Image (tube, rainbow, N blue to C red; front, side, top):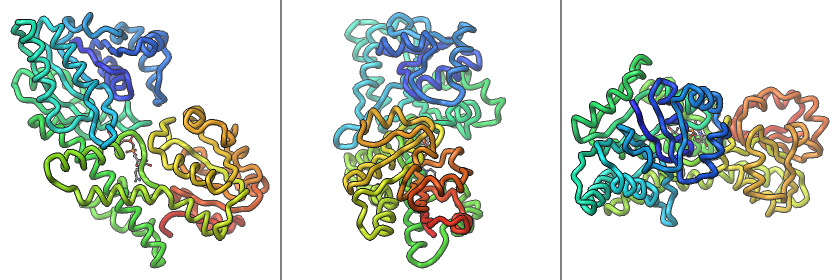
Length: 437
Ligand code: UDX
């Protein structure tokens, strides 16, 4: 089977490579020629565990190749996945211009049946628009070629994307013809050995499933952050509460960790877009408005704890930050809580020393040289009045506290992810603040 994937961003590249890995013949397409040239040389534009080796293996095996021209490969393939970006517009709705441009190119060039599958996260109704544009272009050419559209939203987590693709909890596919259903079944058949279900449904429901899933997960996080903040006020321990509620199978244990707010490319964007879709349909998503409000506020919680500790006198203090990426195992800083924190610290007159195992370059591009980029976690803690744990990378879990204590000016730790034990830290002579205890 031969397929094309348009867009070599995070989703496109992982999808293409994983399909190649299970034996599909894959052509990855991107209009950005620099990106395609780099990929041909084996240089990948994103940080994802195991992806580079997988790409190189499949390129060598001849199952994966890269091109800038969809036109040139369109008539060789049975399926085109569209995995181009849908950045938020100023009003929060998803910008569909890339998705619709792909549809136009397909309509202008197709000679034979093709199934056009949207993988990008797109509002309900987008598949209809894609179909209309392809048909419009076919009509302009005066040709009659059969085609189908489908929706196959992605549920990859950064840092675990290959695993998520290879052994997903479920695959959601929205179709409206038997032919499309057959093609998608054939494509995903090799994965069925891994014991998961392909859930077929109508296209609007598939489009909605992605937004509903991400919004539900974001809601769990904001809810737990609210509970954590209340725990602090009433003298409860959110960790115990989390264990207590998580053991109810209706609630479940996953995704209940309080922290300093969710970030990344998906949750903030998708929550906004769903609010917008509702607005366009004359409905107000009251819960999601609150989810956003809690999240915005939560990004300041660690800073507020620091301010309180120093009685609002932060001017001239040196603050160390461990972790910059919005979560571990990625260099992604989109909507990262670290950005809000650094901005507040600089405005308050602090000197900021940061360390992250992967996101230093990304941070430098965003913030520039107004902060110090440390070579390792101990370097970051040098002469610091406080150390703030922002991203829970594994390497931060068991540092040598004796060294840190000597390195720092004051033994003060603010743990934004609750990865250390309060009693333990206090026994080692640190003043310790965390979330929800
Ligand atoms: C998410 C979804 O999980 C994925 O299914 C979807 O396709 C894309 O969006 P991702 O953004 O890569 O994936 O990261 P995820 O691991 O879900 O974390 C999102 C944010 O939530 C991070 O900032 C993380 O720190 C935060 N989070 C997660 C919490 O604060 N508490 C939790 O319990 C879990």
